[in-house]
Image (cartoon, helix red, strand yellow):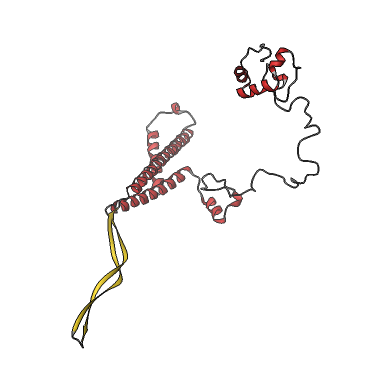
Length: 287
């Protein structure tokens, strides 16, 4: 590129065109004697710096032209290498491997790996959507009550105090009186003794507001789930009521000759039928 421009192209422009550093282009210029080559005193060859093929084009990858270091190299391990013998690789741990399980939230459940108690539990699960909604409501209500009890106990303990007493070994100075019967003189002799004594008493009130706030936030989430479970149950019960009424209407039409709704005069029996279906449903709910 520099030679094609007659030596007028700047080295930094060449570096920018080839996406390389300016210093590398300057090194090529010095090692390949671009100045002498431009004057015609040096043959077109290079000294291991920049190949002639790079002039005016993007750099090529791979070994320089004429390099035979890779002749006969077919890749892979040398003939007779036994390092990978009997190593089948694989796609991971054996089936049922649980070494990577942490919380179990996204754990894969293998039916053949269930315990006997878990298998019995699966057999006892009722997949009826209304029964499932009822069980969810029961559990959410119990959880809601327990959380409210925890909040109450924390609220009751807001004014509690914590008392801390620090005991320390201290030397107590005392004066002992000694009476000499011969001389009749009473002397006072000071002495000291060591005793564990209270050195510091602290009383401080503590509040568990953080715990209360966290519990109240969790309680709100539980109550939201409970509301959604109630809405789901209502939708399911409404659908079942509608299906019962439609079934009874169809059976009534068949008894009246199989005609449509227009084939017979509405005598108010359908409305009575709907009321009866609603009564049957309420009886089922109370059972």
